[in-house]
Amino acid sequence: MADDERTAGLAHARRAILEKKCVVLPTDTVYGIAADAFSPQAVTMLLVSKGRGRSMPPPVLIPRLNALDGLATDVFPEARQLAEAFWPGGLTLILHAQPSLDWDLGDTKGTVALRIPADEVAQELLTLTGPLAVSSANRTGQAPAQTAFEARSQLAESVEVYLEGGFRPVEGTDAMPSTIVDATSLPLRVVREGAVSLERLREVVPVLLDIDGNAGEPEESAEPAATTEPEKLPEPEAAGVPDAAADELSESGEQEPGEKTPSGPAGEKAPDAE
Image (tube, rainbow, N blue to C red; front, side, top):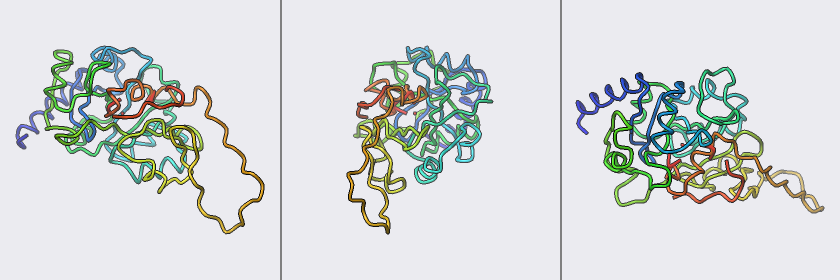
C-alpha cells in the first residue's frame, strides 16, 4: 500500500468509525473487523456482521500502554509486567473493566480483554480513533481472514472500509491467534495458547498457570525446601474465565489466529483470531 493510499484509506476508516460503521484492518495476527468500542450501536453491528450474539463480546485493541489504566481497574503487578514485556504483540489480557466507562461490549460480566497489536496500520488507525472493539474478520465458524480480500468474501457490504495491508501474519503461514491470559485473579492463567509461548510468559511471571491450571516453578529461594508434601493448587472455578474472553475462545477457526481450545472453563470471553 503506497503512502498516499494508506493515508487516504486511514482517513476513510476513521470517518467510518466516527459514523458508527465497521471497518476491516490488518493486525499482527490476522485481519480484524473493528468498531467504536464506546458505541453500543457500532458494537452491535460488529456482532451482527459476524453472526454472533452478546454472549460473545469482542476484545478491545488499544493504541498505547497508558490506555490500560483508563480501561481496566485493579490491575495486578504481574499483569502489568506481562503488558510491559509483550505489548505491542500477540498477548491479550483479560482484566476487570473500569466500572465508570460508558460502553457496552456485550455480556462481559465486568471484564474486558485488551491488547496492543504490533502492526503499523492497526496502530495508526488506533491513534486516530482510540480504542476499538475488534474481532477476527470472518463469519462465525469460518476460517479467519488473512487478507482484506478474504475478509470481504465473508463480510461483504456489512463493512464500510477494507484496509488491505498484505498477508497476515506472513504469507505461507497459518493464522496465529494471540495468547490470552486471565489476569482477573491470582495466580494469572493462560486460557488460550497462541503467539506468545508459555515459556516466554513464565520468564516474566514464573508462577503463571498453564491452560490446564498447572503452576510454573516458583523462583528459587534461599530457604531450604520443605520436607512435607507441597499443597496442591485448587482447580480454577467453573466460571473462572471471564466473559470478556469468550470472543477469542469461542471459535476454533478464529483463534485471534491455530489456537488450542482450552480445556478449562469456557469464557476474550477468551482479541478471537485477534
